[in-house]
Image (cartoon, rainbow, N blue to C red):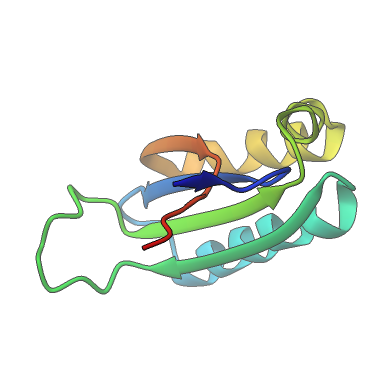
Amino acid sequence: MEEQQGVLTHVLLAKFKEGTPPDQIDQLIKGFANLVNLTEPMKSFHWGKDISIENLHQGFTHVFESSFESAEGLAEYIAHPAHIEFANLFLPHLEKFVVIDYKPTIVRI
């Protein structure tokens, strides 16, 4: 197995609070996506809704994934004023969330 050099993935699983209007969720997602334009360390952003037929999502409905070139870049992003401002807007709309950061690993067979 080979850990990718210089790549770090930041994943947030979220469940929005009951009653959060869909248009408000859309605006929050657009704000999250815009962080890639406001914070230099953030290299990419992807998101999606749970579509699993296994029903193992534990209530999480959305996944947000961003990539960084290093742990230092992620730390810079977390401390960036644009991220802090967005988090203060975004997090109150979540019933629950979990964050996982990892370095992707390639398995060569």
